[in-house]
Length: 288
Image 1 (spheres, rainbow, N blue to C red):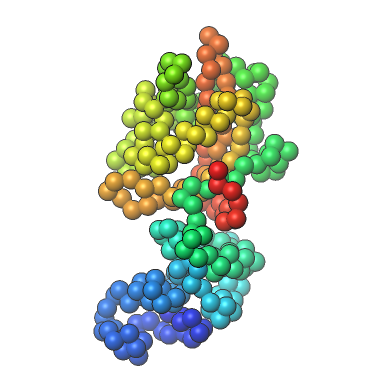
Image 2 (tube, rainbow, N blue to C red):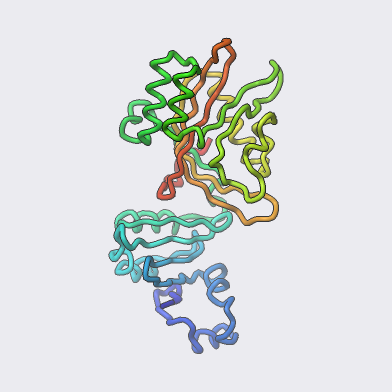
């Protein structure tokens, strides 16, 4: 079941001969919903057995639309969530199972304007006193082991990464020479950010040299900061990554970067990240 909701809050069942005529187009034109929401501020509501989908353009939601959508939002629950699919510097999606969260997010997205469209890469850093409550269990244990081992990247740490499965989501980074950029020394095999580019192809190459060079440079900057200050960091990341031959791809994950020294005293960094598809970072947070 599908509806288009105009900025005045009026519902139109779709397909609709009357609405198509209003646009001077044929009802068989499958591009009408996308055109209406991108250019005219309509909301496209699609009901599916597993979820409801709200598609719209950020910054063009009206108070009337939010008001008439409240019954839809109140039906959200963990077993049947509501997905927000919106245009803001490319298409982005979020899935929520709580009415209050949905109402808050719609209010945030309604207020966006072109100059304030979201950054492609958003980072929210957790203060260490929050880690016990905010960090994924595996990352908490890895950080505890880092403290116990005094930052030494030895056999016990490697065994923990292997036995916990975190090695598949861990990248080891270092400098092959003093003035060289940070290189990938080893990477797990569970990174699927790019279709035709496996992360293991980065091994032995600069961390920044990813298919999306802007994202690669942004990631490398985070590791450089930890290298300089020597303090671990736990971040929630919401990134829209682009690469040749595929549409922008959104990844939400929690990442723990730790500074180490190996058995020979050589400095190393590890970045361990766990995907969190339900992560929602408020848009007013700094993304540095």
